[in-house]
Length: 248
Image (cartoon, rainbow, N blue to C red; front, side):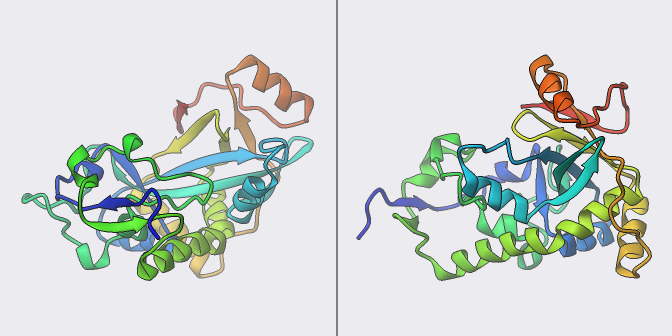
């Protein structure tokens, strides 16, 4: 039964390979760096109050986060490693095709499906041209149809959970310890490729220490600053060139 079936037929326009950051698993980030490409780091923080009326969303996010100390508070931080394709993906060939198609990241294989189970796929919110939704394979009706796609989505979610601690420790090793508050902004770091690669290698070799207790949150909205301050969260008050503060 196909109620509200969504179809998708990629036309190879390459628009999804440009002007964005491409989320990577930790192993994919290793490969990305080995190819000589840049990897950005996105840090978001949250706590139990972020989804006070939606415990399922909190549980999902908590599984891919690490609990850290910030001031007098305990918060959770998610680190996302992302291939830097703000101009365009460095693997996009001159003919508009993927140069690493057989080794492309999971998120590229899954696209346009959503990895977060609480975000619905809405074609109108995607950047793909309208015609790609008019033909092709059925992505899903009230569930994912393709078992290969379903497996890739679950593998991506599991990698988020498995990689969480490692990514936070790598961030701390490089002094990236200021996060934005989830749903308010993103703290985007553009670390030196060699330094990031070396930090991951040190983690792989067991020489990166566990989480420290000096995390801070950047928040510019007065109401949010008041809320976090009352909860004892340490705020980053100094202008910083270490990261880009991107308001949502």
